[in-house]
Structures are given as structure tokens and as C-alpha cells.
Image (tube, rainbow, N blue to C red; front, side, top):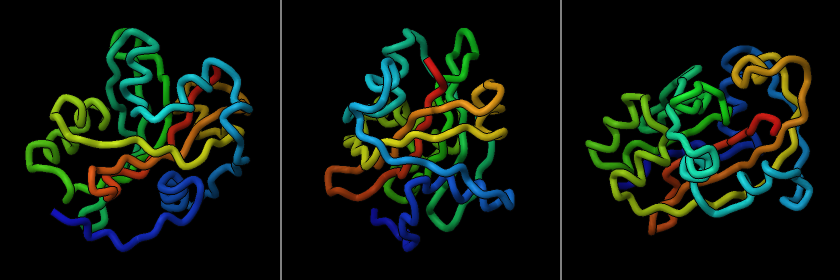
Amino acid sequence: MSSTSTRPVISDLYPLEEFYALRGKTAPSIERIEPEEIPQPQRTLLAHQTDMTSTLENFYGQRLHVEVLARHSVENEYCREVALRLEQSGRCVEFGAIKIMLDLFSTEVRQEILREKKPLGRILVDSGVDFTSRPHLYLCITSDDFINRALGLSGPQVLYGRRNTLTDPWSRPLAEIVEILPPA
């Protein structure tokens, strides 16, 4: 399988910025930061080479499920804006956006992704897909009304996140992700 994506990564908030553009809105501005500038426990949850699903499930001791807030597709690129919620409490523990290269996955894995029930990280681990997590940058962002609604917050909040790429053993990007955490 080979990726047919021709759209480049165009900003530090890609693919989240696409969802803002589709709404006719401007994404919040961000500041690039070093991992050492992120307070705990967000630093532990962001500054690693592991997928966020496994990291968050281990930290909270609960499985996560996906709440899809918006989605769109272009050719073999499936993009979704999501809130990851703890299965037992329903608490939102991550807001973000992901572009998934469907043509790099088996039919079974593609079908599971498109069911929109499980986070991508769990699908990949459960399916035995070999991948690497490669964070590119860490960010500080002030939440807007949309992020606040997704995370169940009120008023502007200083939040931390990262831009991450999941790659296969041949360094092909399986997914481009913006991952933003709520306050501790």
C-alpha cells in the first residue's frame, strides 16, 4: 500500500486548523514551547514517544472512547476532530484533530477506524500494527469557546499540547495529530 496524500502539513496546528477553516473561524494562536516548560502532570502525558491513547489510559486507569465532533475526507485522508473521554466517568481528557492515511491500513483496520468508537492508538495496538510516535513540537494554547465546550471548560484557559506524527516502519506517516490536554 502507498499513500496518495499530496497535501502538505501547513502549520503547527494542522490538521486542527482545517476544522476551524471549515467553520469560517480562525484557530487560536499558539506558542511553541520546550517540554521542560510544560507543568506536571501534562508534561508526563505529552513529552514521550508513545501514543496518547496508551499514555492516557495508563495514567487514568480507564479505557478511552472517541467522541467525534466533526469529520471530513479527501481521497484516502480521513480527518476527524475528537474529544477522548474516559469510558467510566465520561470525563474529557483530550481534545484534538487527526488526519489518518486510510490507504496505509488493512481493510479490517480501516473499518475499525471508520466505526469511530475507539481511539486510533488502541486500534493500532490491538491490531498489531507496527508504528512509531514522533512528536514534532510542544505548544501552549489559550482555549477558545469551541475548545472549552469540547473539554468542558469555562473561560479562557492556558492549555498544553503537542503536534505528533505516527509513522510506519518505512517512515510513512500513518497519522498527523494535534493533541491538547485539559488543565490538571
